[in-house]
Image (cartoon, rainbow over the protein chains, first blue to last red):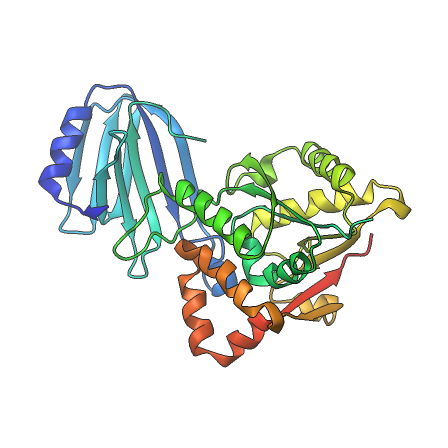
Length: 116
Length: 214
Ligand SMILES: [Zn+2]
């Protein structure tokens, strides 16, 4: 993955508008968050292969970045994104990593379902 | 009868920290080990800085690491169950227990190592441990393997007492470190701290198990 270049990401988002896509959306502070520090709540959530059709999409902020995608009945939103790539299968992968290189948030869009 | 060791964990690298020395000692004697690993740790968080992995490439990396880790400690029989990280507790427990029973029936282990239910922190660890206990508990008493459990919740010693079995694995320290290093995407921090911290080194040189009361 590379550091996010907003104009490149925006161009990619623009190409996805109106297409039927599969969504991976995730946020995590690790399964051991509370084990490592009792004052911290272990908070993890993910959707794998939500089927969505973005009506519009934007990347915002000065880094880390936010991405918001409007869908027919609502929104897809992620904050804290630092890195991105279009992988070998043509999928848009965006993620936010902390200073230790641990993934904290991920927003990914693909024209075919993600592996389960 | 061969003294067969069966190890059951949900994540690649679960075997590395607490059990790989015991495994290496076993295989060094020429005795068989079967390792059931339920998932590929697909939801691991360590991607590196700069990132060397993505959410999508991580399982491929960890698959290779798992194979290398098995080679490092002489595991020849790796069974992967193809489940997904973080979802083990939502699978049907009896179905999982029956799959374990089928392997137990086949390899007839004398010892089985897994996590200690209630003292293994991660929901996948807990679910795996419960299903193993269910499987072994359903066997006739005389056929059961000895069930040894790894516990690392903070209250483990307080509640369970001192570990029932403490194994000094100094004689296979190199093999163990190679197993830990094989899972490099997830274990770099541990390798670093073993190099720096004598307490960590002592921790790695001893493996601790509690017998589960069935
Ligand atoms: Zn684990």
